[in-house]
Image (cartoon, rainbow, N blue to C red):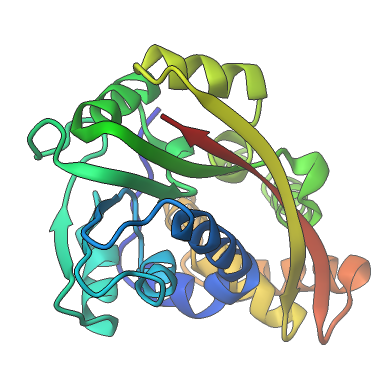
Amino acid sequence: MTTPTFSGSVPNTYHTFLGPLIFDAYAKDMTARLARVLKPNSRLLELAAGTGIVTKEVLGALPPTAKLTVTDISEPMLALARSTISDSRLTFQPADACQLPFSETSFDTLFCQYGVMFFPDKVQAMKEARRVLAPGGTYLFNIWDSFDHNPIPRTVHETLVKLIPTYPIPFLARMPFGYSDRAEIERITRAGGFTNCTIETVEFPCTAPSAADAARAWVEGTPIFAALTERGITDTTPIRAEVEKALTEKFGSAPCRSTMRAIVVTAS
C-alpha cells in the first residue's frame, strides 16, 4: 500500500481545521502520559510528527535540559511544524520510520500520534523504534479505533462512496481507521522486539465550530484532496458541500459535535 502524501495546500488546511477537530485532545492525553516517564535529561524522538500538533503540546511539559528530535517522512508537513515552533530543545529532521537515521539506543522515549497506521512495514518500523530506544525506554503511540467508534469520519467516507461509487476513495477506511485490531497491534509491537505492551482505549469529544469547517478539514486537509484530483475533480466545492450537508444532518451545523475513540499503546 502506497503511503499517502501530504503536500500543496493540504498541510496548512490539515493544521488549521483538522488539528482542533480530532488531534488536540489526544495530544494533551499523550503529553500527560509522557510526563510520567520524562527525566531531566530525557532524549525524546517523535515519529510522524506531521505539522507539530503534539510537538507543541509536549514542549510545554519538557524539562529544560531534555532534548526532542521531531521527525516526519513528509517535508512539507515538517516544514510547517518548523515554521510555527521554535525552541532550543528541538531538532527537526525528515525521517522514514521504517529506516530511522539514528544510532542504536539514541533515545530514552519515543512517541507517535496517529502515524503507525501509515507505516508500510509495521514490523520493520517497530524494529527500528526498538533499535533506537535505550534499555528501559518507553515507546508510546496511539491509533484510531474503527469507524464504529468514530462517526464523523465514517460519515465522510460513506458520503464520498455515494458521490463517487464507481471510483471510491479508500483512504479513510484503509489507513486512519482501518487498523484497530488489538491482537494485531500487540503482535506487531512484540514482533518488533518489545516485550511489554499495554493497550488502552480513550475517547474524547470531537467538535468543530461548524459542519463547514469539518467538511473542509476532511476533504481538503487529508489525502482525499489528492484522490479527488486524480479522479478529475479539480473543484472540490460541490463535494465539500455534500459532506457538510451529511455532517450537519447527523452532528449539527454550528457546532458540529460528536466523539472519537482511539487506542493507546505503551511499549517497552
